[in-house]
Length: 396
Ligand SMILES: *Cc1c(COP(=O)(O)O)cnc(C)c1O
Image 1 (cartoon, helix red, strand yellow):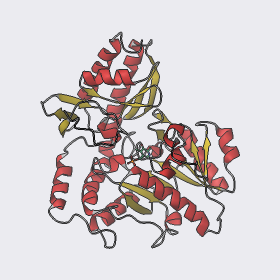
Image 2 (spheres, helix red, strand yellow):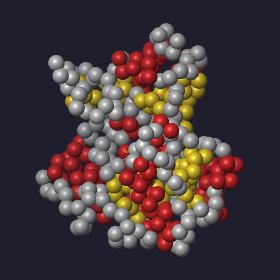
Image 3 (cartoon, protein in one colour):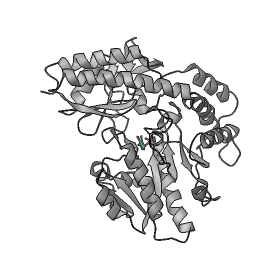
Image 4 (cartoon, protein in one colour):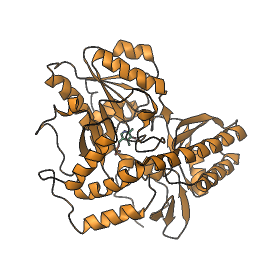
């Protein structure tokens, strides 16, 4: 008997379930089992599964035009870029196919900015422990996670890693060689750690003082996930120069964007960067729908509301299981339970109870549900986690 997955590169290790359909916050297997989805394709399906407006936009576009490449203008892309620039710090947008590519564009733009301003030696990028910026060679070097670098050749020059939260080390590391500081306002993979708002403002001030650019990686924490359109908007005077976005911006259609100010964007001239697929008509048709819904202040207010219901539920779990729960972490609907043990057994126990959750860092159970979840969905998820935490086999 041939194992059906034998030809898939074994870099993932998924469980046996095969999902064939989704609706809102729920996923269904072929045999009709229903799962409550509190990970949403890793913070991607912000509007849940099979959102009717997204489905309609994609189907309509599929019958009209799929692809022309960026040799030609793409009307929906121009429209979406205009909306993004009206609704954020940005003046220029480059569309990509993924978060990693948005990071690549951000790193290249930062270096080119200084080069174009006559500062050729200013190419170093400062990043932080626990960071995750994607899986390309530049992105793993930016992230600095030894496990992701192992076996892939010598470390790339031009990346400096600082301990998350070590202000003195950061100050000492910034020099006239620093092109940019790259940071996730809320770390995703690294353990769902939110940077204090004052630190974001402090980073902006430090960059203004030293001439380094500030790059945010909001691939995971952006697009409404924390209850603001972008996570850095919780902080005052903390706008970046460049920002990488993906995941939630496509709601499940794979695309990303690199946003930047005019001062940076003006150095990226024809020939400096490109992508065959980036911003293609299918992606842009879906992207406009997602943006219109998620950028609506009333929608974001709802996200903040259900976030606080979830926070209360998680607090009650922490109170009921002090022997297993060390604390809570994260922000809005990118949140986590810090456990006194590795998260995998609890994640599996939840899945056996038909609740899908994620893991992050060494000991965090990660929750990133669709932004459209209801209070009742939250109660259901909390009840499942409570039941799983009661299992004596978990964490002992
Ligand atoms: C997922 C992620 C990336 C990489 O995005 P891909 O679409 O997987 O390439 C980069 N940064 C952060 C913060 C992410 O969560």
